[in-house]
Amino acid sequence: MSDDHKKEIDDVTGVETTGHEWDGVKELNNPLPRWWVWIFYATIVFSIGYMIYYPSIPLINSATEGVGGYSSRGELHKALDEAQAEKAGMLQQLAETEVSEVPANDELMRFAAAGGESAYKVYCSQCHGSGAQGGYGYPNLNDDAWIWGGDLEAIYTTIAHGVRHEEDPDSRFSMMPSFGTDQILDRDQIRELAHYVRSLAGLEHDAQMASAAAENYEINCASCHGAEGEGMTALGAPNISDAIWLYGGDVDQIAAQIYDPQHGVMPPWVDRLGETTVKQLTLYVHSLGGGE
Image 1 (cartoon, rainbow, N blue to C red):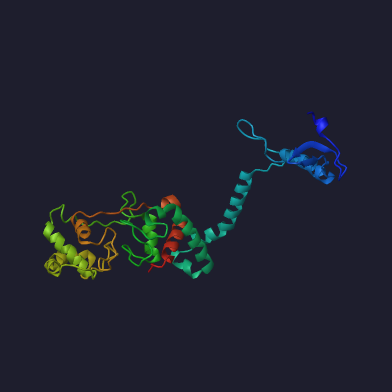
Image 2: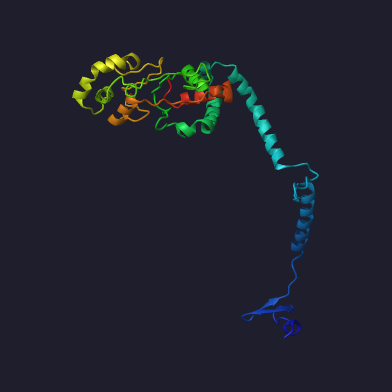
Protein backbone atom coordinates (compact mmCIF):
# COMPACT_ATOMS: atom_id res chain seq x y z
CA MET A 1 0.00 0.00 0.00
CA SER A 2 1.41 3.44 -0.92
CA ASP A 3 1.94 6.29 1.59
CA ASP A 4 -0.93 8.18 -0.06
CA HIS A 5 -3.33 5.43 0.89
CA LYS A 6 -2.02 5.34 4.45
CA LYS A 7 -2.30 9.08 5.07
CA GLU A 8 -5.57 10.35 6.48
CA ILE A 9 -7.05 13.18 8.47
CA ASP A 10 -7.19 12.61 12.22
CA ASP A 11 -10.80 12.84 13.42
CA VAL A 12 -9.92 14.48 16.75
CA THR A 13 -7.36 17.10 15.71
CA GLY A 14 -8.10 17.50 12.04
CA VAL A 15 -4.35 17.11 11.29
CA GLU A 16 -3.11 14.92 8.50
CA THR A 17 -1.22 11.84 9.62
CA THR A 18 2.16 10.78 8.26
CA GLY A 19 0.95 7.34 7.41
CA HIS A 20 3.00 5.77 10.19
CA GLU A 21 1.17 3.65 12.73
CA TRP A 22 2.39 1.64 15.74
CA ASP A 23 0.00 -0.57 17.70
CA GLY A 24 -2.92 1.52 16.58
CA VAL A 25 -1.22 4.82 17.41
CA LYS A 26 -0.96 7.10 14.39
CA GLU A 27 1.65 9.84 13.95
CA LEU A 28 0.36 13.32 13.25
CA ASN A 29 2.17 15.39 10.67
CA ASN A 30 2.50 18.54 12.82
CA PRO A 31 5.17 21.04 11.64
CA LEU A 32 8.05 21.95 13.96
CA PRO A 33 7.48 25.05 16.15
CA ARG A 34 8.83 28.12 14.37
CA TRP A 35 10.98 29.15 17.37
CA TRP A 36 12.66 25.75 17.29
CA VAL A 37 13.33 26.05 13.54
CA TRP A 38 14.87 29.50 13.91
CA ILE A 39 17.12 28.30 16.78
CA PHE A 40 18.24 25.43 14.58
CA TYR A 41 19.11 27.85 11.78
CA ALA A 42 20.93 30.07 14.26
CA THR A 43 23.11 27.18 15.44
CA ILE A 44 24.10 26.54 11.84
CA VAL A 45 25.12 30.16 11.38
CA PHE A 46 26.95 30.15 14.72
CA SER A 47 28.89 26.99 13.83
CA ILE A 48 30.05 28.53 10.56
CA GLY A 49 31.22 31.65 12.41
CA TYR A 50 32.93 29.48 15.03
CA MET A 51 34.82 27.55 12.35
CA ILE A 52 36.02 30.82 10.83
CA TYR A 53 37.05 32.49 14.09
CA TYR A 54 38.66 29.55 15.93
CA PRO A 55 41.10 26.82 14.81
CA SER A 56 38.75 24.03 13.79
CA ILE A 57 39.33 22.34 10.43
CA PRO A 58 42.07 19.66 10.51
CA LEU A 59 44.55 19.64 7.65
CA ILE A 60 47.28 17.11 6.83
CA ASN A 61 49.99 18.50 9.12
CA SER A 62 48.15 21.25 10.98
CA ALA A 63 44.75 22.92 11.17
CA THR A 64 43.15 26.19 10.15
CA GLU A 65 44.35 28.90 12.54
CA GLY A 66 41.16 30.96 12.64
CA VAL A 67 40.92 34.70 12.21
CA GLY A 68 40.81 35.28 15.99
CA GLY A 69 44.37 34.04 16.53
CA TYR A 70 43.30 31.88 19.48
CA SER A 71 44.93 28.58 20.46
CA SER A 72 44.75 26.51 23.61
CA ARG A 73 48.55 26.21 23.64
CA GLY A 74 48.84 29.96 23.42
CA GLU A 75 46.49 30.31 26.39
CA LEU A 76 48.57 27.80 28.34
CA HIS A 77 51.83 29.63 27.64
CA LYS A 78 50.20 32.91 28.59
CA ALA A 79 48.99 31.44 31.90
CA LEU A 80 52.43 29.95 32.60
CA ASP A 81 54.13 33.26 31.85
CA GLU A 82 51.74 35.04 34.20
CA ALA A 83 52.41 32.48 36.93
CA GLN A 84 56.17 32.85 36.47
CA ALA A 85 55.85 36.62 36.64
CA GLU A 86 53.90 36.36 39.88
CA LYS A 87 56.54 34.04 41.38
CA ALA A 88 59.51 36.02 40.15
CA GLY A 89 59.51 38.43 43.07
CA MET A 90 59.29 35.68 45.68
CA LEU A 91 61.96 33.62 43.94
CA GLN A 92 64.26 36.62 43.85
CA GLN A 93 63.67 37.26 47.55
CA LEU A 94 64.35 33.59 48.32
CA ALA A 95 67.55 33.66 46.27
CA GLU A 96 68.80 36.66 48.23
CA THR A 97 67.92 35.23 51.67
CA GLU A 98 70.09 32.81 53.61
CA VAL A 99 68.34 29.49 54.03
CA SER A 100 68.59 29.73 57.81
CA GLU A 101 66.79 33.10 57.79
CA VAL A 102 63.80 32.07 55.66
CA PRO A 103 61.66 30.57 58.49
CA ALA A 104 61.51 34.00 60.13
CA ASN A 105 59.47 35.25 57.15
CA ASP A 106 56.15 33.40 57.24
CA GLU A 107 55.08 34.31 53.71
CA LEU A 108 58.44 33.41 52.20
CA MET A 109 58.57 30.18 54.20
CA ARG A 110 55.14 29.08 52.95
CA PHE A 111 56.15 29.88 49.38
CA ALA A 112 59.46 28.02 49.69
CA ALA A 113 57.96 24.94 51.36
CA ALA A 114 55.22 24.70 48.72
CA GLY A 115 57.78 24.89 45.93
CA GLY A 116 59.98 22.39 47.75
CA GLU A 117 57.11 19.94 48.04
CA SER A 118 56.53 20.11 44.28
CA ALA A 119 60.24 19.63 43.55
CA TYR A 120 60.40 16.76 46.03
CA LYS A 121 57.64 14.85 44.22
CA VAL A 122 59.53 15.16 40.93
CA TYR A 123 63.13 14.53 42.03
CA CYS A 124 63.16 12.83 45.45
CA SER A 125 60.08 10.68 45.96
CA GLN A 126 61.41 7.87 43.77
CA CYS A 127 63.97 6.99 46.46
CA HIS A 128 62.70 8.53 49.69
CA GLY A 129 59.01 7.72 49.08
CA SER A 130 56.02 9.91 48.34
CA GLY A 131 55.61 10.58 52.06
CA ALA A 132 59.38 10.86 52.71
CA GLN A 133 59.13 7.64 54.71
CA GLY A 134 62.23 6.19 53.07
CA GLY A 135 62.84 2.50 52.52
CA TYR A 136 65.56 -0.13 52.54
CA GLY A 137 68.78 1.80 51.93
CA TYR A 138 66.99 5.17 51.75
CA PRO A 139 66.68 7.38 54.84
CA ASN A 140 63.34 8.34 56.36
CA LEU A 141 63.19 12.14 56.22
CA ASN A 142 60.39 12.42 58.78
CA ASP A 143 62.31 11.17 61.80
CA ASP A 144 65.06 12.91 63.77
CA ALA A 145 67.88 10.57 62.74
CA TRP A 146 70.37 12.47 60.59
CA ILE A 147 73.64 10.96 59.43
CA TRP A 148 75.07 14.33 58.38
CA GLY A 149 73.06 16.64 60.61
CA GLY A 150 69.50 17.88 60.42
CA ASP A 151 69.70 21.66 60.71
CA LEU A 152 68.99 23.81 57.66
CA GLU A 153 72.60 24.38 56.68
CA ALA A 154 73.45 20.68 56.98
CA ILE A 155 70.42 19.57 54.95
CA TYR A 156 71.17 22.20 52.29
CA THR A 157 74.75 20.94 51.93
CA THR A 158 73.65 17.32 51.67
CA ILE A 159 71.05 18.06 48.98
CA ALA A 160 73.27 20.50 47.08
CA HIS A 161 76.38 18.31 46.94
CA GLY A 162 75.04 14.81 47.40
CA VAL A 163 76.55 11.84 49.15
CA ARG A 164 79.63 9.96 47.94
CA HIS A 165 79.58 11.63 44.54
CA GLU A 166 83.15 11.63 43.32
CA GLU A 167 82.65 14.41 40.76
CA ASP A 168 81.63 16.93 43.44
CA PRO A 169 84.52 17.86 45.75
CA ASP A 170 82.06 19.12 48.39
CA SER A 171 80.04 15.89 48.43
CA ARG A 172 79.50 14.09 51.72
CA PHE A 173 81.94 11.20 52.11
CA SER A 174 82.20 8.48 54.72
CA MET A 175 83.31 4.90 54.33
CA MET A 176 82.98 2.06 56.83
CA PRO A 177 85.69 -0.60 56.68
CA SER A 178 84.74 -4.06 55.44
CA PHE A 179 85.62 -5.87 58.66
CA GLY A 180 84.92 -9.29 57.18
CA THR A 181 86.00 -8.89 53.57
CA ASP A 182 89.26 -7.24 54.68
CA GLN A 183 89.76 -9.92 57.36
CA ILE A 184 89.89 -7.43 60.21
CA LEU A 185 87.49 -9.59 62.24
CA ASP A 186 86.35 -13.18 61.81
CA ARG A 187 82.71 -14.21 61.39
CA ASP A 188 82.25 -15.11 65.07
CA GLN A 189 83.56 -11.73 66.19
CA ILE A 190 81.30 -9.97 63.69
CA ARG A 191 78.26 -11.85 64.95
CA GLU A 192 79.17 -10.92 68.50
CA LEU A 193 79.40 -7.28 67.42
CA ALA A 194 75.93 -7.54 65.86
CA HIS A 195 74.53 -8.60 69.25
CA TYR A 196 76.46 -5.76 70.92
CA VAL A 197 74.95 -3.23 68.50
CA ARG A 198 71.46 -4.54 69.25
CA SER A 199 72.20 -4.18 72.96
CA LEU A 200 73.06 -0.49 72.41
CA ALA A 201 69.66 -0.04 70.74
CA GLY A 202 67.85 -1.75 73.62
CA LEU A 203 66.80 -4.67 71.41
CA GLU A 204 66.72 -8.38 72.17
CA HIS A 205 70.24 -9.84 72.05
CA ASP A 206 72.53 -12.55 73.39
CA ALA A 207 74.07 -10.95 76.46
CA GLN A 208 77.06 -13.30 76.52
CA MET A 209 77.94 -12.61 72.87
CA ALA A 210 77.41 -8.87 73.36
CA SER A 211 79.74 -8.88 76.36
CA ALA A 212 82.40 -10.71 74.35
CA ALA A 213 82.24 -7.97 71.67
CA ALA A 214 82.65 -5.00 74.02
CA GLU A 215 86.42 -4.75 73.53
CA ASN A 216 86.21 -5.14 69.75
CA TYR A 217 83.55 -2.42 69.63
CA GLU A 218 85.73 -0.04 71.62
CA ILE A 219 88.76 -0.72 69.41
CA ASN A 220 87.10 -0.78 65.99
CA CYS A 221 83.79 1.11 66.20
CA ALA A 222 83.64 3.63 69.03
CA SER A 223 85.93 6.15 67.32
CA CYS A 224 83.20 6.81 64.75
CA HIS A 225 79.92 5.62 66.26
CA GLY A 226 80.68 6.80 69.80
CA ALA A 227 81.08 4.91 73.02
CA GLU A 228 77.31 4.56 73.43
CA GLY A 229 76.57 4.24 69.71
CA GLU A 230 75.30 7.82 69.49
CA GLY A 231 77.06 8.42 66.16
CA MET A 232 78.97 11.44 64.87
CA THR A 233 77.43 13.69 62.22
CA ALA A 234 80.80 15.31 61.49
CA LEU A 235 82.02 11.94 60.22
CA GLY A 236 78.76 10.75 58.72
CA ALA A 237 78.67 7.90 61.22
CA PRO A 238 75.04 6.98 62.03
CA ASN A 239 73.56 6.65 65.47
CA ILE A 240 73.28 2.89 66.07
CA SER A 241 71.55 3.17 69.43
CA ASP A 242 68.21 4.53 68.16
CA ALA A 243 66.96 1.31 66.49
CA ILE A 244 66.65 3.14 63.16
CA TRP A 245 68.25 1.09 60.42
CA LEU A 246 68.99 1.73 56.75
CA TYR A 247 69.82 -1.88 55.94
CA GLY A 248 67.84 -3.80 58.53
CA GLY A 249 68.23 -4.36 62.25
CA ASP A 250 68.15 -8.10 62.86
CA VAL A 251 71.34 -9.95 63.79
CA ASP A 252 72.00 -11.28 60.28
CA GLN A 253 71.44 -7.90 58.63
CA ILE A 254 73.67 -6.05 61.09
CA ALA A 255 76.37 -8.73 60.74
CA ALA A 256 76.20 -8.44 56.93
CA GLN A 257 76.65 -4.68 57.15
CA ILE A 258 79.69 -5.09 59.41
CA TYR A 259 81.18 -7.84 57.23
CA ASP A 260 80.86 -6.00 53.88
CA PRO A 261 79.00 -2.69 54.34
CA GLN A 262 76.74 -1.10 51.76
CA HIS A 263 77.31 2.57 51.06
CA GLY A 264 74.45 4.57 49.61
CA VAL A 265 74.93 7.41 47.16
CA MET A 266 72.92 10.51 46.30
CA PRO A 267 73.51 12.84 43.34
CA PRO A 268 74.36 16.50 43.91
CA TRP A 269 71.36 18.61 42.94
CA VAL A 270 72.62 22.17 42.96
CA ASP A 271 73.96 22.07 39.40
CA ARG A 272 70.78 20.47 38.06
CA LEU A 273 68.19 22.47 39.99
CA GLY A 274 69.96 25.65 41.05
CA GLU A 275 70.50 27.10 44.51
CA THR A 276 66.96 28.49 44.89
CA THR A 277 65.25 25.15 44.27
CA VAL A 278 67.72 23.42 46.60
CA LYS A 279 66.73 25.97 49.26
CA GLN A 280 63.08 25.11 48.67
CA LEU A 281 63.81 21.40 49.02
CA THR A 282 65.82 22.06 52.18
CA LEU A 283 63.02 24.03 53.81
CA TYR A 284 60.40 21.46 52.81
CA VAL A 285 62.41 18.51 54.16
CA HIS A 286 63.15 20.40 57.37
CA SER A 287 59.46 21.22 57.77
CA LEU A 288 58.46 17.55 57.72
CA GLY A 289 59.13 17.45 61.44
CA GLY A 290 62.47 15.76 61.85
CA GLY A 291 64.70 18.76 61.31
CA GLU A 292 66.99 19.93 64.07
